[in-house]
Length: 263
Image 1 (cartoon, rainbow, N blue to C red):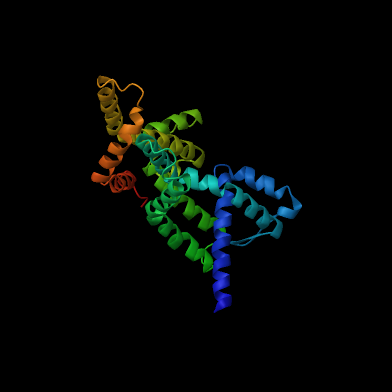
Image 2 (cartoon, rainbow, N blue to C red):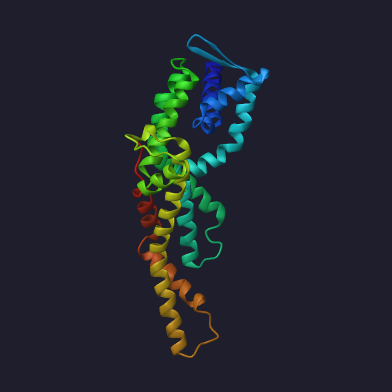
C-alpha cells in the first residue's frame, strides 16, 4: 500500500515537472526537438506510441520546472490581480505595513487556489489521472493540461490585448477558438489584461478613502490645526468605515466574481 502511494506521488510529481518544464517549448516544438536530439545524453526515444525520456533529460526538466514554477504561478493564475488589489487596499487604508506582506501573500495564494480550483480539478481529472494510470502519454497529458490553462487565461483576457499581441507577433489570421491561439500570445496578453483590471479595481477601492482624507484635511484646515497630520486623524475613520461595511468580505467577494472559470 505504501509502495503504491509512493508510486502515485512520484507519477503526479513527474507529470507536474514535465508540464512545467515543457510549457515554454509549446510555442515552438520543432526548436525543442532539434535542441534535445542534438545532445546525446538528452535523447528522446520513441518506441511506437510510447515516448521515453532519458534520466539526464528528466533531471534537466526537473531543474527547469523548479526555476519557472514561481513565474507560472504569477503569470498563469489569478494571483497577480489579487495581490495588486490587496496592496492598493492597504495603501488606501494608510495602515503602513498592516496587514504585513506575508499575510497579503497568504490571502492571495489561498484565493488563487479557490479561484483556480475548477481549472486545476479539470486538469487533474483529464490529464494527471490518466497519465498516472498509464492511459495516456506524457505529450498527451501535457497537451490536455495546457489546453485547460489556456482556456482559463483566454476567458479572463481582453480581446483588445489578444489582438495587440497577435499583431506584434505577426499573426494576421482570425482565431476560431482558444485552442488556436499560441501560448506566446496568450501569456503576455493575459498578464497585461490582469494588470489593467487590477488597477481599475484598485482605483474604485481607493476613491472612498480618498474622500475621507479630503474631508478630514478640510476640517483641520478650517480649524487652524495646520500642524496636525490629516492622515493620523483620518485613519480611525477609514478603519471604522471599512469594518462597518464588512470591507474584507466585500473586497474578496468582488475579486472572486471578476474571474471566469475555465470550462
